[in-house]
Image (tube, rainbow, N blue to C red):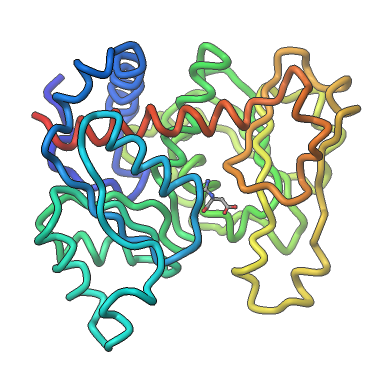
Length: 313
Ligand code: NCD
């Protein structure tokens, strides 16, 4: 297959077919086996622009580390105080500055539509590292890769997605990604944090969707635990609540603790995009199903593969 990622933006999981995602996973496998001296040719002399308008630890470090791992460098900012935005420069002009000095842009912004807007301004490829509550496509890619690696397949699995399904952008990218596979998805949330209709309406219109995804909604987690192959926990997105009191009502709605390990399938996996607050108790970290730290490590590999595919024909 010709490389469909070359010079392309990464704005939504909806834009990638199953075959394209499988090519990304294969490339990730290859990259993780390559020696550094072979990997550096993939990104040598290339510069990644980092534009992060929102807090991030994992995603930014992982983009920078991924670029370094293929021989490239990264420049940019992770808070706006040191930029000319403070002097009144527009977002579009800021994108133009980064574009002029780099080969590819990785950006995170609190507004929905921000990454697409940047991609309209920039002639260089833009990768979204999270756009408001909308999507976080590279997280979706590394989530699917984690399932593939840790379970050996994605088809045929029963996957629970738990927590803040309304504001959690990783949830949307994950659902759009899973819709290209043959899976059962159980969505678990308080009634006020149910998934937004846009996630499930028109799934059949998503590129490469095979329509065998089956989605059910629940309010209780514990009865489902023995049934699930993948348990994807998420943080309640406090900062996105219009009202602090509304947050207080749902705070701590779901958590898993060490003893829940016993009622889960022995070969189930527990994932989380991280950061976690209290939804996975630290005591669970030593349980055989815990995979969230491994998931985080896969992030670097998948982003290195993605960068190398976008930068090289
Ligand atoms: C997530 C995000 O920023 O959307 N974090 C991440 O990138 N791994 C999840 C979150 O903040 O809860």
